[in-house]
Image (cartoon, rainbow, N blue to C red):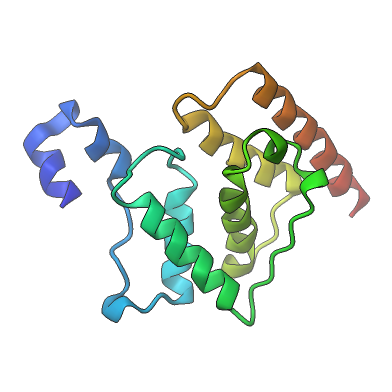
Length: 150
C-alpha cells in the first residue's frame, strides 16, 4: 500500500516516506518474536503521532505479545526515566526498546536506550520542548551512571 503511494506521489508524499518499511502484519494474525522484533525496530524511527493507520495497532500488538511472553521481561522504574513524568505516552516506546534488546539477544547501554527514545520524542510533532529536553538530559545522566556501575 505505502510503496504504491510512494511511487505514485514521489517526494510529495510525506506519509509515504515516513511510513515506508512498516512490517507486514503477521500471517494468520499471530504475532511471533521475529515479527515483534522487526516491528519494534521500525517503530524506533517513527514519532508518536506518525503513521496513524499503523502505529496504534502495531504498538498494541507488540505490547500485547510482550506482556504474554514467558521469555521477555521488562521492568520500568519511572524514577530512572524522568522524561516519563513529562510524556507518559513514551512508556510504551521505552518498554518496546527495552524488550528489543532481549529479542535481539544483545545488551545496549542505558544511555543508548535513552537516545533511542529521545529520537522518537523529537520526531513526535508538538512534543519536544525545553522541559522535555532537560528531562531527557537528566535521564541520560542517570543512565550513564547506571552504565558505569555495571
